[in-house]
Amino acid sequence: MKGNSKRQMADIPAGAYNPLEFAVTRQAQSTVDMVKEAISHNQTLLAFQPVMRTSAQHQVGFYEGLIRVLDPTGRVIPAGDFMNKIEDTETGREIDVLALRHGLNNLRKNRALRLSINMSARSIGYKPWMNCLNRFLNETPELGERLILEITEASAMMVPELVTSFIHRLQQKGICFAMDHFGSGSMTIRYFKDFDFDILKIDGQFIRGISKCPDLLALTRALHAIAQELGMLTVAESVETVDDAAVVTQIGIDCLQGYYFAAPTTQPDWLRPPKTERRA
Image 1 (cartoon, one colour):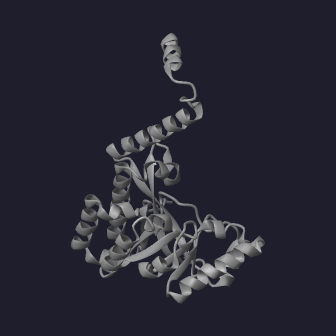
Image 2 (image 1 turned 30 degrees about the vertical axis):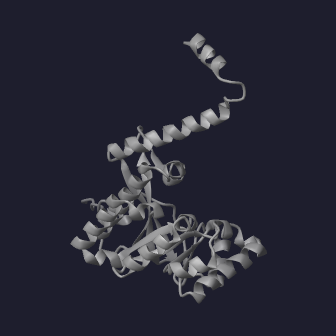
Image 3 (image 1 turned 45 degrees about the vertical axis):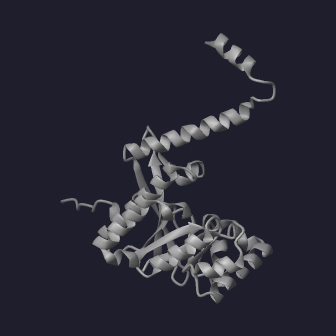
């Protein structure tokens, strides 16, 4: 086998083989295969992270449902470890469907829950995704009033006209829309106005360390001011320290999300089994 491998390598033209590129490609394919395997065995779930009200930081405004998959050992794999490798693929669309289905099932089971779910603009024209949403809304129309759909700035800018039409159509069903990771892409003001998002989530790169950086403070104030002018609720992402939380609160941002308040969990209160009292 080793001899064959050496001969195969010798047949490759000089400069055509890059060990680092090969390793990266191999790892990416391994990740895609792992996600496909998890989907085929129904090994997906949501992790929930609270988004807190700034005016009362002990009160949850809503939760964000973040898709997770289980690897063959049962380990929970966060979306950040695989989404960028499947975003442009059919597997990415299947993951969007599963995230939506998990989210809508939770909304149906818990009438007190308000939940945001991430989606790609690519899924707007994906029939299984729309079929899933329409089926739940037809069966339980009130779900729309408690559902928030999050689309990243970069994803929205791929097909802005399609996203704009999609938002306006589904807002009539009571669904709210959040622009996720605002400030991380190349949004133009014209499209930003046309989108008519309900919620603006300011990217964590502007929030982490804001208490020690005047430049971040100025930029975040500017982003918040734009949202205010357009009547949008604002959320600061990646709030990780008490000092950053205090500064963001002072700016007037409406909601805070980050590890300072809670990490995402697959076992939120409403999914935990009730505690049984011990008998004396």
